[in-house]
Length: 324
Image (cartoon, rainbow, N blue to C red; front, top):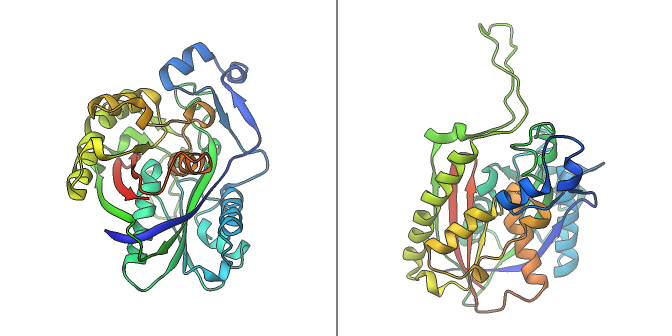
């Protein structure tokens, strides 16, 4: 066991809510079409915010909740596939905004597996013995990456951020085991944010295409087939069975995928809480937002065993088992 604890959780979503019914003004769709296929009724979208704004709000809430000073932080990590810019990176903007002068900062991009991958990196820093306290945030403004005329993709995504404060501890709690896997040969199943190369020497101009493109059926098949394998490996490393896990916090991509996971593991859906009905798919932020909701409502209690599961763009999958 890597002895560390989650000291605080927080989330931030934009005030603007876009319902499925409202999307009918933009495209040929309906709540009757979207909800049964995805489990999504609403999504929150920014109006005058960017990714660093949502992440900064989470950072401020984390510090207020914990009583920590920004100068207590050794590092700040932000997981995002929708940064304000390629440079400066989002974590550096957050570090500057909260004046965390002692912290180094950088971004991680593992798309929808970003919460687990970023949490893995943060945990490794703490377990190295060189650092004591860190902040990890998953933050996305996916509304700037979707074509709002494309009903196959735009109905799925929302904006939001969530994060945690982590600290080394002598208590019997922390990260029990993890399994991270990548499937780069299938990466074109989810594409977004392609740049055009217009340098003076290039022969054929590569296409500029900022929008999401997704093979929905392929991604569904990948998730339902491969995620259970990765999660089983993490459980085996932890010396646990599926029955030993109190809650499974999976990336909130699609209700049908999570139902399939629960069935595959022979577990009741009560162990697989969901919130995509209100937020849609917020990529690296989704599990963090769900975690904060469960913490704030007292549904995660000391001593519980919790699994975090991420899957998506890359393609990539990550699973961690934590003792709270």
